[in-house]
Image (cartoon, rainbow, N blue to C red; front, side, top):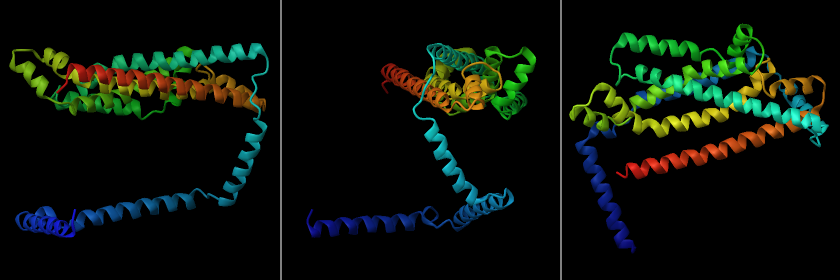
Length: 295
Protein backbone atom coordinates (compact mmCIF):
# COMPACT_ATOMS: atom_id res chain seq x y z
CA UNK A 1 0.00 0.00 0.00
CA UNK A 2 1.53 3.32 -1.13
CA UNK A 3 1.63 6.42 1.06
CA UNK A 4 -1.08 8.17 -0.97
CA UNK A 5 -3.40 5.17 -0.72
CA UNK A 6 -2.84 4.93 3.04
CA UNK A 7 -3.53 8.63 3.42
CA UNK A 8 -6.73 8.36 1.39
CA UNK A 9 -7.85 5.33 3.45
CA UNK A 10 -7.33 7.06 6.81
CA UNK A 11 -8.99 10.22 5.54
CA UNK A 12 -12.07 8.21 4.54
CA UNK A 13 -12.15 6.42 7.93
CA UNK A 14 -11.87 9.70 9.85
CA UNK A 15 -14.59 11.27 7.70
CA UNK A 16 -16.88 8.31 8.36
CA UNK A 17 -16.19 8.50 12.08
CA UNK A 18 -16.92 12.23 12.12
CA UNK A 19 -20.18 11.59 10.32
CA UNK A 20 -21.12 8.82 12.75
CA UNK A 21 -20.36 11.06 15.73
CA UNK A 22 -22.55 13.76 14.25
CA UNK A 23 -25.45 11.37 13.60
CA UNK A 24 -25.18 9.40 16.86
CA UNK A 25 -23.79 11.76 19.51
CA UNK A 26 -25.06 9.65 22.44
CA UNK A 27 -23.15 6.59 21.28
CA UNK A 28 -19.83 8.49 21.16
CA UNK A 29 -20.41 10.54 24.30
CA UNK A 30 -17.96 9.77 27.12
CA UNK A 31 -19.76 8.04 29.99
CA UNK A 32 -18.16 9.88 32.89
CA UNK A 33 -20.66 8.44 35.38
CA UNK A 34 -19.77 4.88 34.37
CA UNK A 35 -16.04 5.63 34.59
CA UNK A 36 -16.52 7.19 38.02
CA UNK A 37 -18.37 4.10 39.22
CA UNK A 38 -15.54 1.88 37.97
CA UNK A 39 -12.94 3.98 39.80
CA UNK A 40 -15.04 3.94 43.00
CA UNK A 41 -15.41 0.13 42.83
CA UNK A 42 -11.66 -0.39 42.27
CA UNK A 43 -10.64 1.93 45.11
CA UNK A 44 -13.35 0.48 47.35
CA UNK A 45 -12.05 -3.06 46.77
CA UNK A 46 -8.48 -1.92 47.41
CA UNK A 47 -9.55 -0.18 50.65
CA UNK A 48 -11.37 -3.31 51.86
CA UNK A 49 -8.32 -5.45 51.07
CA UNK A 50 -6.02 -3.05 52.94
CA UNK A 51 -8.38 -3.01 55.93
CA UNK A 52 -8.47 -6.81 55.92
CA UNK A 53 -4.66 -6.99 56.00
CA UNK A 54 -4.55 -4.64 58.99
CA UNK A 55 -7.53 -6.21 60.81
CA UNK A 56 -6.28 -9.78 60.41
CA UNK A 57 -2.82 -8.74 61.64
CA UNK A 58 -1.01 -10.28 58.67
CA UNK A 59 2.72 -10.06 59.37
CA UNK A 60 4.87 -10.29 56.26
CA UNK A 61 7.83 -11.55 58.28
CA UNK A 62 5.76 -14.63 59.19
CA UNK A 63 4.82 -15.06 55.54
CA UNK A 64 8.49 -15.08 54.51
CA UNK A 65 9.30 -17.49 57.32
CA UNK A 66 6.45 -19.66 56.12
CA UNK A 67 8.04 -19.93 52.68
CA UNK A 68 11.22 -21.21 54.30
CA UNK A 69 9.19 -23.73 56.27
CA UNK A 70 7.44 -24.78 53.06
CA UNK A 71 10.81 -25.46 51.48
CA UNK A 72 11.69 -27.74 54.40
CA UNK A 73 8.43 -29.66 53.93
CA UNK A 74 9.20 -30.15 50.25
CA UNK A 75 12.68 -31.42 51.07
CA UNK A 76 11.41 -34.07 53.53
CA UNK A 77 8.81 -35.23 50.98
CA UNK A 78 11.51 -36.39 48.60
CA UNK A 79 11.67 -39.01 47.34
CA UNK A 80 7.94 -39.94 47.37
CA UNK A 81 7.33 -43.39 48.78
CA UNK A 82 4.36 -45.64 49.43
CA UNK A 83 6.19 -47.93 51.83
CA UNK A 84 5.12 -51.53 51.49
CA UNK A 85 3.16 -53.24 48.71
CA UNK A 86 0.26 -53.59 51.14
CA UNK A 87 0.19 -49.82 51.59
CA UNK A 88 0.15 -49.35 47.81
CA UNK A 89 -2.87 -51.62 47.42
CA UNK A 90 -4.67 -49.83 50.24
CA UNK A 91 -3.93 -46.42 48.70
CA UNK A 92 -5.13 -47.50 45.24
CA UNK A 93 -8.32 -48.96 46.68
CA UNK A 94 -9.00 -45.71 48.58
CA UNK A 95 -8.27 -43.69 45.43
CA UNK A 96 -10.83 -45.70 43.46
CA UNK A 97 -13.28 -45.15 46.31
CA UNK A 98 -12.70 -41.39 46.10
CA UNK A 99 -13.31 -41.38 42.34
CA UNK A 100 -16.45 -43.50 42.82
CA UNK A 101 -17.77 -41.08 45.45
CA UNK A 102 -17.20 -38.09 43.16
CA UNK A 103 -18.65 -39.80 40.08
CA UNK A 104 -21.75 -41.20 41.76
CA UNK A 105 -22.47 -38.05 43.74
CA UNK A 106 -22.05 -35.76 40.72
CA UNK A 107 -24.15 -37.85 38.33
CA UNK A 108 -27.01 -38.33 40.80
CA UNK A 109 -26.98 -34.64 41.66
CA UNK A 110 -27.08 -33.70 37.96
CA UNK A 111 -30.04 -36.03 37.33
CA UNK A 112 -31.95 -34.52 40.26
CA UNK A 113 -31.02 -30.97 39.22
CA UNK A 114 -32.36 -31.18 35.64
CA UNK A 115 -36.06 -30.85 36.61
CA UNK A 116 -35.17 -28.22 39.23
CA UNK A 117 -33.29 -26.24 36.58
CA UNK A 118 -36.29 -26.23 34.26
CA UNK A 119 -38.64 -25.21 37.07
CA UNK A 120 -36.28 -22.41 38.14
CA UNK A 121 -35.95 -21.03 34.58
CA UNK A 122 -38.14 -18.01 33.85
CA UNK A 123 -38.75 -19.01 30.24
CA UNK A 124 -40.16 -22.39 31.31
CA UNK A 125 -42.15 -21.64 34.47
CA UNK A 126 -43.30 -18.00 34.40
CA UNK A 127 -44.97 -18.06 37.82
CA UNK A 128 -42.86 -15.83 40.05
CA UNK A 129 -43.90 -17.56 43.29
CA UNK A 130 -42.63 -20.98 42.16
CA UNK A 131 -39.58 -19.38 40.59
CA UNK A 132 -38.76 -17.43 43.77
CA UNK A 133 -39.23 -20.45 46.04
CA UNK A 134 -37.03 -22.76 43.92
CA UNK A 135 -34.28 -20.17 43.43
CA UNK A 136 -34.09 -19.29 47.13
CA UNK A 137 -34.10 -22.97 48.08
CA UNK A 138 -31.18 -23.59 45.71
CA UNK A 139 -29.37 -20.57 47.16
CA UNK A 140 -29.84 -21.96 50.67
CA UNK A 141 -28.43 -25.37 49.76
CA UNK A 142 -25.54 -23.82 47.84
CA UNK A 143 -24.58 -21.47 50.67
CA UNK A 144 -23.49 -24.41 52.88
CA UNK A 145 -20.02 -25.73 52.09
CA UNK A 146 -19.58 -29.37 51.06
CA UNK A 147 -17.41 -30.02 54.11
CA UNK A 148 -20.26 -28.92 56.38
CA UNK A 149 -22.67 -31.16 54.49
CA UNK A 150 -20.23 -34.04 54.98
CA UNK A 151 -20.17 -33.44 58.75
CA UNK A 152 -23.98 -33.30 58.80
CA UNK A 153 -24.43 -36.52 56.82
CA UNK A 154 -21.78 -38.33 58.88
CA UNK A 155 -23.91 -37.65 61.96
CA UNK A 156 -27.01 -38.84 60.08
CA UNK A 157 -25.82 -42.02 58.30
CA UNK A 158 -22.48 -42.63 59.99
CA UNK A 159 -18.89 -42.70 58.73
CA UNK A 160 -18.06 -43.99 55.28
CA UNK A 161 -18.37 -43.28 51.56
CA UNK A 162 -22.19 -43.13 51.66
CA UNK A 163 -21.98 -39.93 53.69
CA UNK A 164 -19.53 -38.56 51.10
CA UNK A 165 -21.89 -39.32 48.22
CA UNK A 166 -24.78 -37.63 50.04
CA UNK A 167 -22.61 -34.58 50.79
CA UNK A 168 -21.67 -34.18 47.13
CA UNK A 169 -25.28 -34.66 46.00
CA UNK A 170 -26.54 -32.03 48.43
CA UNK A 171 -23.84 -29.46 47.71
CA UNK A 172 -24.05 -29.87 43.92
CA UNK A 173 -27.84 -29.74 43.92
CA UNK A 174 -27.78 -26.00 44.53
CA UNK A 175 -24.90 -25.44 42.10
CA UNK A 176 -26.33 -27.48 39.23
CA UNK A 177 -29.80 -26.06 39.77
CA UNK A 178 -28.46 -22.53 39.31
CA UNK A 179 -26.18 -23.36 36.36
CA UNK A 180 -28.84 -25.41 34.55
CA UNK A 181 -31.54 -22.75 34.99
CA UNK A 182 -29.24 -20.02 33.68
CA UNK A 183 -28.27 -22.17 30.68
CA UNK A 184 -31.95 -22.76 29.91
CA UNK A 185 -32.77 -19.05 30.19
CA UNK A 186 -29.87 -18.15 27.87
CA UNK A 187 -30.76 -20.79 25.25
CA UNK A 188 -32.05 -19.98 21.77
CA UNK A 189 -35.86 -19.92 21.86
CA UNK A 190 -36.42 -20.35 18.11
CA UNK A 191 -36.55 -24.15 18.26
CA UNK A 192 -38.96 -24.05 21.21
CA UNK A 193 -41.20 -21.57 19.39
CA UNK A 194 -41.14 -23.82 16.33
CA UNK A 195 -42.34 -26.79 18.39
CA UNK A 196 -45.23 -24.75 19.80
CA UNK A 197 -46.16 -23.38 16.37
CA UNK A 198 -46.55 -26.93 15.02
CA UNK A 199 -48.98 -27.86 17.78
CA UNK A 200 -46.58 -29.27 20.36
CA UNK A 201 -47.37 -29.13 24.06
CA UNK A 202 -45.30 -27.47 26.77
CA UNK A 203 -43.66 -30.80 27.51
CA UNK A 204 -42.77 -31.19 23.82
CA UNK A 205 -41.36 -27.67 23.86
CA UNK A 206 -39.01 -28.60 26.70
CA UNK A 207 -38.09 -32.03 25.35
CA UNK A 208 -37.57 -31.18 21.66
CA UNK A 209 -37.10 -27.40 21.69
CA UNK A 210 -34.94 -26.62 24.72
CA UNK A 211 -33.16 -29.79 25.86
CA UNK A 212 -31.23 -30.63 22.63
CA UNK A 213 -29.76 -27.12 22.46
CA UNK A 214 -28.55 -26.96 26.06
CA UNK A 215 -27.49 -30.59 26.45
CA UNK A 216 -23.82 -29.98 25.44
CA UNK A 217 -23.62 -27.16 27.99
CA UNK A 218 -25.11 -29.31 30.75
CA UNK A 219 -22.78 -32.22 29.97
CA UNK A 220 -19.76 -29.88 29.96
CA UNK A 221 -20.73 -28.54 33.39
CA UNK A 222 -21.21 -32.03 34.79
CA UNK A 223 -17.86 -33.24 33.41
CA UNK A 224 -16.02 -30.32 34.97
CA UNK A 225 -17.77 -30.89 38.29
CA UNK A 226 -16.70 -34.55 38.32
CA UNK A 227 -13.09 -33.37 38.19
CA UNK A 228 -13.71 -30.75 40.88
CA UNK A 229 -15.58 -33.18 43.13
CA UNK A 230 -12.71 -35.66 42.93
CA UNK A 231 -10.59 -33.07 44.72
CA UNK A 232 -13.44 -32.23 47.10
CA UNK A 233 -14.00 -35.91 47.90
CA UNK A 234 -10.41 -36.02 49.13
CA UNK A 235 -11.11 -33.18 51.57
CA UNK A 236 -14.36 -34.58 52.95
CA UNK A 237 -12.60 -37.92 53.34
CA UNK A 238 -10.44 -36.29 56.02
CA UNK A 239 -13.52 -35.87 58.26
CA UNK A 240 -14.59 -39.49 57.76
CA UNK A 241 -16.61 -39.46 54.54
CA UNK A 242 -14.59 -42.23 52.88
CA UNK A 243 -11.88 -42.24 50.26
CA UNK A 244 -8.22 -41.39 50.27
CA UNK A 245 -8.59 -38.32 52.48
CA UNK A 246 -8.40 -40.44 55.64
CA UNK A 247 -4.94 -41.65 54.57
CA UNK A 248 -3.81 -38.06 53.97
CA UNK A 249 -4.83 -37.19 57.51
CA UNK A 250 -3.19 -40.27 59.00
CA UNK A 251 0.14 -39.83 57.18
CA UNK A 252 0.31 -36.12 58.03
CA UNK A 253 -0.41 -36.90 61.69
CA UNK A 254 2.38 -39.52 61.67
CA UNK A 255 4.77 -37.11 59.86
CA UNK A 256 5.18 -39.58 57.01
CA UNK A 257 5.78 -36.83 54.47
CA UNK A 258 7.12 -39.16 51.78
CA UNK A 259 3.82 -41.03 51.87
CA UNK A 260 1.98 -37.69 51.70
CA UNK A 261 3.98 -36.81 48.58
CA UNK A 262 3.08 -40.14 46.99
CA UNK A 263 -0.62 -39.65 47.75
CA UNK A 264 -0.43 -36.13 46.29
CA UNK A 265 1.13 -37.48 43.08
CA UNK A 266 -1.62 -40.11 42.88
CA UNK A 267 -4.26 -37.38 43.10
CA UNK A 268 -2.49 -35.24 40.46
CA UNK A 269 -2.37 -38.17 38.02
CA UNK A 270 -6.01 -39.05 38.69
CA UNK A 271 -7.28 -35.50 38.19
CA UNK A 272 -5.20 -35.15 35.01
CA UNK A 273 -6.66 -38.37 33.59
CA UNK A 274 -10.19 -37.28 34.45
CA UNK A 275 -9.57 -33.92 32.79
CA UNK A 276 -8.20 -35.64 29.66
CA UNK A 277 -11.15 -38.03 29.38
CA UNK A 278 -13.74 -35.31 30.07
CA UNK A 279 -12.17 -33.08 27.42
CA UNK A 280 -12.40 -35.89 24.85
CA UNK A 281 -16.04 -36.54 25.77
CA UNK A 282 -16.91 -32.84 25.65
CA UNK A 283 -15.41 -32.31 22.18
CA UNK A 284 -17.08 -35.50 20.93
CA UNK A 285 -20.48 -34.22 22.10
CA UNK A 286 -19.84 -30.81 20.56
CA UNK A 287 -18.89 -32.48 17.26
CA UNK A 288 -22.03 -34.61 17.23
CA UNK A 289 -24.17 -31.57 18.04
CA UNK A 290 -22.61 -29.57 15.20
CA UNK A 291 -23.26 -32.40 12.75
CA UNK A 292 -26.88 -32.57 13.82
CA UNK A 293 -27.27 -28.78 13.72
CA UNK A 294 -24.92 -27.57 10.95
CA UNK A 295 -26.53 -24.15 10.80
